[in-house]
Image (cartoon, rainbow, N blue to C red):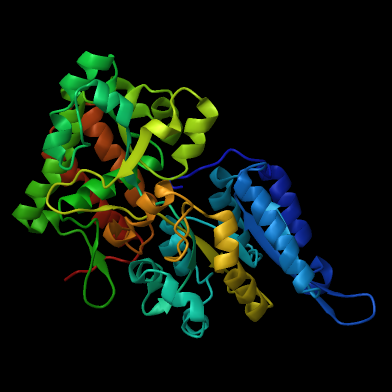
Length: 436
């Protein structure tokens, strides 16, 4: 979230562990299988969601889920609302306790690890038999497939576009947003002189930072970890001088943005909150962001949404953006796989998606009500996602590499070499490294 992260009601850690202990045991004890009045099995589906309480997405989702329960009287959807900041830790705890929910929200970055835990259902046959699957772009399904098995389905997409304040650009004498890195670098003097504001925003820290970095690497035709024969992975930059040169260019781009005043000097410490809020306050003119920024713009009220437009991110070698896939994870421990799939399929229906994910649906036939949604959806075809490996150590190293150039003023090539080495160290530690 993406990365979209929402501040919502959470289950505190100590309470979560108490609840987890209370939920353990047989299905009879946990209440997952209860007899309805008059006989018959009442199937309870445990669903962990991370919507923002009170938001339109939350209210629409709840209305649609109520409708699903009315249409399926033997099904009860037990919804737990968990802050996305807490979702990962709670899921790992529940998986290790063999008490995962039946279905949950998640991030694509967790796919490799959860698959390594053996926690996820194989959804391949379900999706092949589902008529609606042709509405999901191939690269989205491929990003959720490991060793030929589909291990998740998309909940929503957080495609990243260049979101720009058209009014601010026009006040600076700029008619069109930048299409290349060089064009972006050339705009700072004009914008700051005319408006007193910075040209661009980045997240130098937190979950958003690696998501932006992988986009710039993809724009320079680079992979974090290439899949080799046998299904193992490897970072190949240090074996290929051309790749190392292009990786160095990416870190040099970050350093140049800071040194030339294109970005705020504090941006090295910005997470998604500061990046989003400062754009919505009109503190800078352009940012790589997702469709949720519209809500921040409207809640802050400092700039007019009508003055904000979306286009493809400025590119270098190739056009690319970060394809954030927020999946539905369906868990192997469920006692009702068919019913859980039917519920997931309902949430992937055109009816549900049109009500809930108007701007960020994974369905190609749900494009949003205006140009805003369509502009982001059209970027799916140039999207790149994280490799399907355990990413914890890798994303931490990506943040550290950015800090080397943005905070410590170190040489960009040293940052690239450090990241390459740390990626391979992490792959080796996790048993995912290719010796080839």
